[in-house]
Image 1: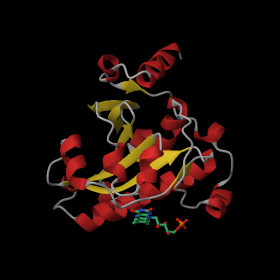
Image 2 (image 1 turned 60 degrees about the vertical axis):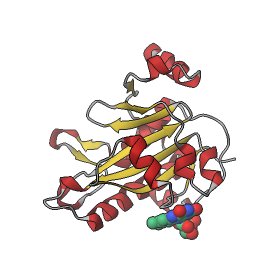
Image 3 (image 1 turned 135 degrees about the vertical axis):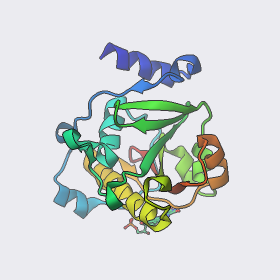
Image 4 (image 1 turned 45 degrees about the vertical axis):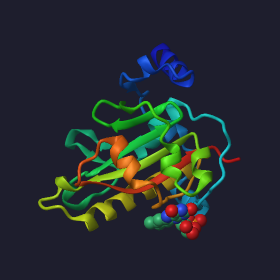
Length: 208
Ligand SMILES: Cc1cc2nc3c(=O)[nH]c(=O)nc-3n(C[C@H](O)[C@H](O)[C@H](O)COP(=O)(O)O)c2cc1C
């Protein structure tokens, strides 16, 4: 527990040397954290484009990332979101004030990607998005299909993004799925190759 608190503090004060190490996440706790049933979440889900500046804890982030595409059948290495031919092609990039990280569900940790605040690039022309403490960017690795199939990647991203939308509602968080973002800037900053395609993003924050 102490380790997570130290890491959260380091990230909050922008201690880059430490934050460049992988950030271990607390175990997700979806059943404990959820404030409502799936049916209620479906009733209440909506796109929200205004967020408070309150930070999101690593515990809540861990739970949210798990709902998106974490292992729900760890023995079979299967995840919460379905994917074409079980390619599990969607990787989540988590952009925050003090840098960008890649969600690594195998280790339940965030792997360092960039020390830059990439939220403005995720926001593009929609300023509201950079006010969110966290912007999750969904990237499909088309190399995971037998031959690159952009439509499979787009469909798989839709499932993951909907998981995020419903989980946010259930956790009391606010989000909106977005296709707009500065793709060229993010492709470079994340170090993506031509078959790793930016599909969608979800800015996430507490409602204002
Ligand atoms: C594939 C997709 C792309 C979207 N892109 C954006 C976007 O770039 N910016 C934005 O503000 N909303 C975006 N939205 C959100 C839609 O505008 C929103 O879902 C729609 O107006 C319905 O509202 P609701 O989500 O509250 O039901 C997108 C939604 C989807 C499914």
